[in-house]
Image 1 (tube, one colour):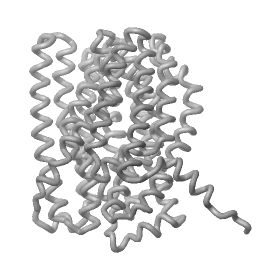
Image 2 (spheres, rainbow, N blue to C red):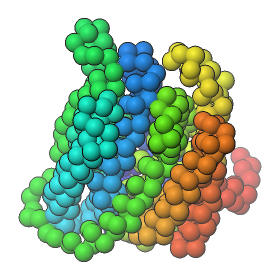
Image 3 (cartoon, one colour):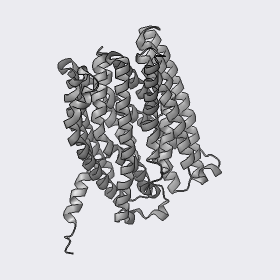
Image 4 (cartoon, rainbow, N blue to C red):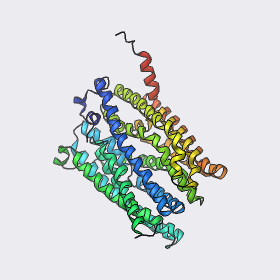
Length: 464
């Protein structure tokens, strides 16, 4: 389904009237209503993710789940690197091409992205397949899980690109469905069926094979969504090339994607590398629960990013200012609504996984605090990547990711699993402060919450 704001986000500059539209209640409602739709998909996806993790733990055990979570973290990190940032470029460039009716470039970008991502993802998968055998032995359970998992790398990478294309052409809600609904949903069904029928030994390889099946279905649905949502003019023209424009941001965008994923998975990776695979599984579950508080922010961001691209392409600074304020307020309000009750039920949610997982309660509380700060800070990451300042964003992401991972390793040695949560939250705070300063420098934009409060103080009193 297309959302009202998405249609505005990809409208040509001469027809959109962004400065005036964002001053109207209609535009404000469009952002809110589209974000609600995305939030609904994210909530359903989070429920499926929780159920999938629960069924896997109950089927294969806590130790095997830890191995699965550790391998999946590496596979996901490699898949995002395989995109070369094209899934971000799609969201940034396709709306801009649409706004300027540059359809040959839009089609050329799509074709180039699919070929490059498929090739790179396959190459990385082959290298990791061989590396798993050399490092831990061909018959080691960890190697077997890695060998199955790496097959998903090109599938996940291509799905990310296809979903980004659907998102750029007005399907911000439907673009979330393949990854958030189908991937975990299919994996849940496979694990449950295999566990019930006892056709596969209940271990980490079963969980990873199920996830591989989910990735196949997710890719198929993402490609279908992109083909349905692309405008008719897209298929009527011959491809044009602008390789310099497409590949110039690829290095900083790849750094951003890799660093972003490393930041979110530092706890699991650091625990796994230090031999604490069971604790890695506990942290993975605790992180996924804490991530529920990020769903409102992610929902708003799914609408926000392509809108920023169009506003920037049209040179509408006032529209960017208004959009940033509105997105921040919506994100913070939604995050608070989720965070307050979530902290109260964390113990119950973790207890379903077993007694070992109760140690994740303080982890959830600490990580939720970081999510609240990120929501209040505003969507600065997208303001940088959607306006051509990806190099500055890459530098911040790289420094934050490296510092976060090093801090995780150090804090794990001192405080165990809680230390990893403290390190990740500290990195989240530092990252958001750094991006806020950078956005103010390059785009002359204050944090969205500051803009919103300033606008409220300037609003004339209502005497009606």
